[in-house]
Image (cartoon, rainbow, N blue to C red):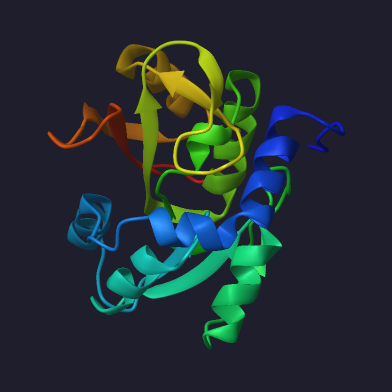
Length: 205
């Protein structure tokens, strides 16, 4: 999966490359509920692939529970910051056809929301191949319809895809995952609505 020059993902990635410091400054340090969702599904020592590590907040919280986290991000600016802080991290694109592994879980907090509808199935298939049988996918998406650009949070626009529960479920299943739950997990203080997906790999592929 090779992105065409100037597409939405490329422009969004460039925004993170240029404004990683601003993103970190404007991102809450509060523990994400998604972290606790994954901890409940896993055991200490389990290997977790984190897609879109960004500042590394969630990885640190997962490691505090004994999980072994491989940090990755599509933006080299975030990877460089993680490396400088003493964390092993690598650049990993949605378009890569091999995520490595096998992992016991894939963790994707506020990252797959940048993937377009036509491409999400392929991305989830690659994540599925990287996950052991019985492993999990825990991810968040923006809730809603359609797609669009936003300059919220950064002084540069980013592209988002919005999903409803019933629309997302068959795509997850078509990629080889068994959806366990897709729920609205919007906080009362949030200006946007959010979905949390929890899925499992039940069969080898």
